[in-house]
Length: 184
Image (cartoon, rainbow, N blue to C red; front, side, top):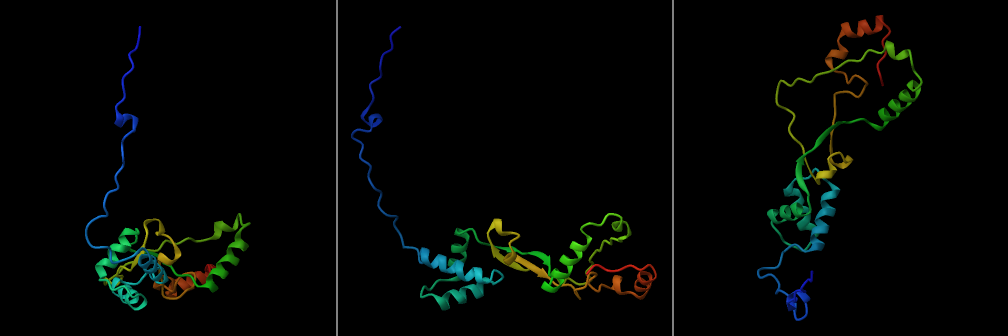
């Protein structure tokens, strides 16, 4: 059985094909240069919790480029920065962090002591809608980055946060009678 070879065309051999360069895209040049975009991100990273109005004012004060807010927003979107609701994280002061670290190191070798610990579960109820959403500018992978978290401050910074269920006289009396200590 004999096979017949197919003759290749000039296009298939890429002999006489000349690649032509396309003309630049018609229309107006972008107002924001790459340098402006980098500068915008640098300003944004100083305060992720800023709003678009403040970001616009800071950008106009620090650069010679005059743009509108929508142009800034578009530039942020192109760099994958979006305004998103920040994740709340309970605020713990440095002093309390140190106390908790010392306590956990002390309890590291506990075995039977854990049986005498009382764990409580708390629920939060709001009578009035006081917890507004706090927004941050972030990329999708930065959800839990420290600068993108919203600190939640409870009243008092003891182990039990001074909530009424912990500070009621009957609760204090019961804890005293049963020698129950609080976590720092």
